[in-house]
Image (cartoon, rainbow, N blue to C red; front, side, top):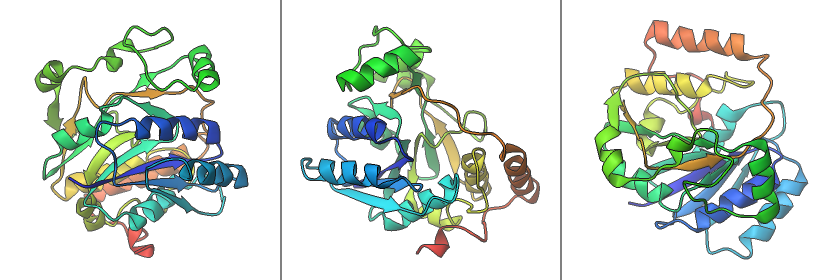
Length: 261
């Protein structure tokens, strides 16, 4: 199945280049890689252009002006540029296991989106990775804070993968879905600005439109590089927007991807 890999980023070009290297090492390569850039400076653009000239990946740089944390709108811009039926979405600080994309495709199923997990790297381990440019890890590598999520096993994955409509642990850093399912609910809600809950609200509307969750374990493995946490000053407002969609059983948002299509 043809698919687009969407990577969110903001002013972290060193991290992004490692993620792109891991995307280049996939057993099944994406038909296109779209970088959803939430207003990075020209340094990121220059590094993306440099990488584009030496990779066989098709890379599209989707950029918007820096007006604060606007991940929802940035994702919508990138999704509007996508050309393929299936979307795999990650963050620009998550290095991918070589079978990451293959796992998402093998588990894709109409009527479901996929939610995967991540391994957290310690601060020291992340520094080492950045200095060595290493994108391949062993399950026994040092510096993993939740090592169990780094275990890749098809047998264990078949046993522990489950389906539900639970909002717990929703993260767009390891998620995939059919593009049309996203369009049908008008994508992400652009009203969300600042860190938090725009991904959960997106999933609430998917649930209300009949799409369920497939929780992957022991596959679609990714390694999350350490970084400082984003400001939580907008979280209270964003939780209110999330709760409103839950209460209203919304399956649509007025200010969404239709603004970009």
